[in-house]
Image (cartoon, rainbow, N blue to C red; front, side, top):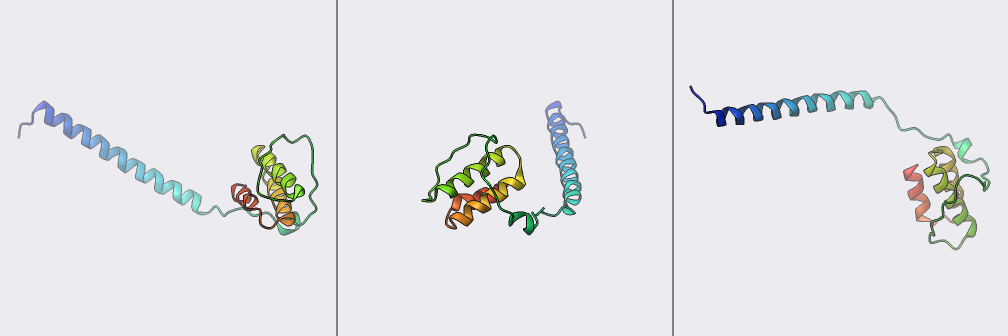
Length: 115
């Protein structure tokens, strides 16, 4: 069978695409297996229950949220500053404290999900 150069070009492109798809599937499968053993980390309850204080020098982040509690707003802002600084545990603790001050502060729940 004699194929035209155009036909050979199409076949080569399809073979290359199939090879890339197959290699990607193998890589994704290996990556899934590698990460299957990872469990979601959790913060021990005794750390979450420790008293949290408002601190200075961690950043000046302010995002107005729907709360009537100035303390909840302050702890939410502190949690956001820690979140932006990649200090996950302190961010979680600050968001928890904001929720202790105002259990209806939905943005603090979102902050917990991000942290």
